[in-house]
Amino acid sequence: MKERPAEPASLENAAGHNNMLQLIQLRWIAVVGQITTIAVVTLGLGIQLRLPHMLEVLACLIAFNIGSHLRWHERRVVANDELFFALLVDVGILTLQLYLSGGTTNPFAFLYLMHVILGAVLLEAWSTWTIVGITCACLAGLSLFSEPLVLPYDDGDGLSSLYVEGMIICFVLNAALLVIFITRIEGNHRAADAQLADLRQRAVEEEHIVRMGLLASGAAHELGTPLATLSVILGDWKRMPEFSRNADLLEEIGEMQAQLQRCKSIVSGILLSAGEARGESSVKTSINVFLDDLVRDWRSSRPIGEFEYDNRIGQDVPVVFDTALKQMICNVLDNALEASPAWLRLEVVREADSLILLVTDRGPGFVPAMLPHLGKPYQSSKGRPGGGLGLFFVVNVARKLGGTVTAGNRSEGGAQVQLTLPLAAIRLEDDKDRAQIEVQHAG
Image 1 (tube, rainbow, N blue to C red):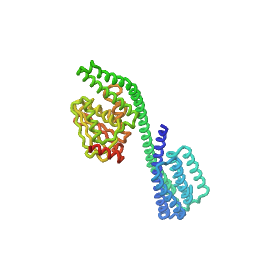
Image 2: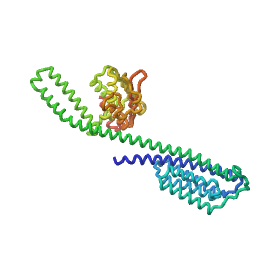
Image 3: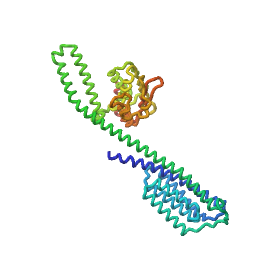
Image 4: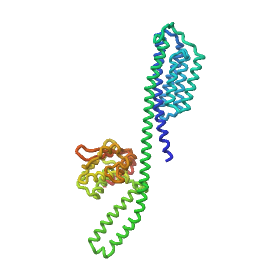
């Protein structure tokens, strides 16, 4: 439980990584923009710039961005301090270029606003205000120490003025880049928020499962004593002369013992699924043996009209199954049987590294409004208290194994539920155990 607070932090770091990649892309645009601006000003307008020094600053920007790309391509954790430092470097590069090209008389000095706005979106409050203070200090320093550009004679007003034209270009760049990149950054934050909401929902559902497991475990413990007592009484009855001489009574006692044994197996399964004696619940077997045994036991204990079982796995694979997985499959079959007691079909196939189980029936199907909420607790069309927990447990068990559960209605009538489980979650990797199972199958 102590590790759970790390989930929001990891999501925040993931959003920070995406935001850092956005800054790297923006920096490449700045490189292209500076090269274009220098070329146009020097070659097109004939304005003399301190070109060697400006190219040196530009080379430093390119080197820093290449280093940033290599660093953050491999490392996924980006905190506020790293984003703050990246923006400080951008502010420093802009300040140097403005110092070499006219200072505050350069219309591109308004690009400082972009860094302030990006800081407000990306950084914590203290970092944003620090960026504001630094940019203000840089503007003040440029107004005091930079040398104005030597411009050609310009008697134009309005759009004919070079300064006005540069200011308009700067405004358009600011507006376009801010809209594009802030939209992307907000998209990163929304994706992180959505993932965090999903994790919180899962935490609530898992807590609900824990409460249900504790309740079931307590009930199973309470039922264990009377079931054991009944088993002893039935054993004594079977040996009593009054019953042993009556074949009909012996048959009924045998049936009662069988049903009692089934109740004890259900109680044991509840305890195993609740996490008690978990080590004993795992069974080393193979896919085909497990499924064939499961289908045989399920069919013999349910009153079903027609049941079709189509196993098309082909090559068998040694695996490890536990009681929770068996109960999950039986739960899906039980739900289908309740909706369609006359006919039911289970189809099993293997596709690549996944095991797919498809259960179909000829019942009334799912209510369309329920399908988007598949696996949510208490989503049921049965109209009784506690309904809808079956698929809720199925979805959560499958999710813990890395699998998925999908459901839908068939065009010819009825419903279908598909379980997709990765073989990696149940495959038996130990060579000794694998050889032992192969010997058992050969025998």
